[in-house]
Amino acid sequence: MAQQTDGTFGERFVERARTFGPVCVGIDPHAQLMQDWGLEGSVAGLREFTSRCVDAFIDSACVVKPQVAFYERFGSAGFAVLEEAISSLRAAGVLVVADAKRGDIGSTMAGYASAWLDESSPLCADAVTVSPWLGFGSLEPVIEVGERNNRGVIVLAATSNPEAPSVQLARTSGGEAGESVTLAQDIVNRVAERNARHSGPGNLGVVVGATVDSPPDLSEVSGMILMPGVGAQGGTMDDVKRIARGSLDLVSPNVSRGVLKSGPTVEGLRSTLLEIRESYLK
Image (cartoon, rainbow, N blue to C red; front, side, top):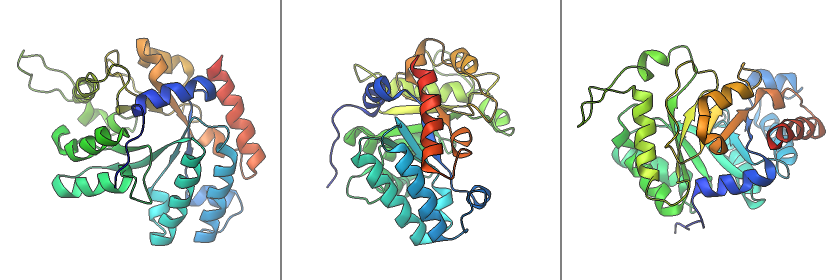
């Protein structure tokens, strides 16, 4: 049976960020990084990598974002490791965003919603990333579950991969008022419309890269702005401020490489995260 969480996901993020800073740290056990840490590319190596990250972040992170693909490649055994990590982090109060980027229609999307946002699922997280590129309406099943359970639905809007502008900067044909906007802005506007039903930050959020040259206007989004690309990928705090403008308090800068390169020790990971965290708390 689904269990509703008190307060929207956006409200919980803002509240936790006051103490732990807004940084989202990734758990990205890709093959090269596991090798750099001296770990085998096996389930045992995956479990050890994940365990060290959990130990480092469980008492120091605001948000942790496991990259689902790196667990999925190990099949059911990989998902078992992910389930354990999600459970441990959430039990300690850490907000967990499952970076799954799911996107489908109808009952299939409803299945993804149940998997990632329903308390009855062993994979249940505080939020999940989703892709809107089958049409924003295709997200309705996951949005409905997110709203019902006060869990986050973080929608891709303006990503920083080289291929993105050809799609995300394409323009709509114009709404009722005849105004044409970029597809990225259209996604942000639709998220803002859904969040407007809440008195504070809502359950929906957006992904906007810190290195995007032509970002959408985020002034009305009223939800978490997950901003990857900070640090090793070239994004700076000035970029964060430029893109966020008046919604800076809703930004969760995603720092993964910059922290994970400090492994393989728990102490190294925690120390780097705390250093980065302090810079955002000033």
